[in-house]
Length: 298
Image (cartoon, rainbow, N blue to C red; front, side):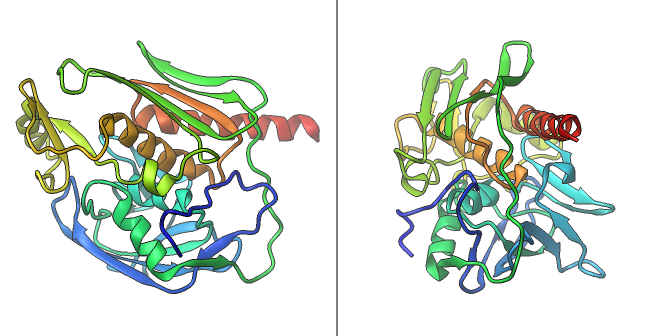
């Protein structure tokens, strides 16, 4: 499988895909700083994307669904009962962007490794083993329809899903450091490949916030090797992979969080100065809207 040929789709009219064979990656978690091992394994049709904490007693399963979201402080964390898995968004973006519908994600540790700070290493891992149509019998689940604008906002930050003839993600950011400033980017899988246009974009942070975040117990595993860091004087560890790498990474995060719906709705997702918190709120709103439509149709 060539990593430059992905198959991100809306889930309507196409067979579900899984991996051809297992593949493993290891690395340090962004927030915990702990070394974690992840093995992606093929799963049968209808199983969806799900995590298994194989390092815990009884190997608890954590579905990669909106209902599993526990918290969204500078990353997306999923959990079931006492089992949690943190910083899932980059891996989920790679799986969703490469069209892997069913996959068992075995994790030895509390957090998905950050690797180089982007989704590209996961895209390479998926391409290394390839994907295939899943085996087994399953009734196809229709994707969530976006029939009217849906949005959530906090102050001037928002994220919305608008009716659209194609799947598209548009994002805007605005930072008070000149090297980032105001950036907008719009991407559609029909016109640009996820593996080359979005997956390589790395996570980023502001130098003057690093000490404060670490005092809060966050970004213990962050370094100049796995995150872009920007100061008021400019980028501390250039070069960038794209001139607008920060906003492309925000699209990557949005793809990962929206993938918690299971399938991507045919919609134009537009976000401005948003966060994992707002991304997940919108996903929950779309689930609620689907439930209400089903109730009214009965």
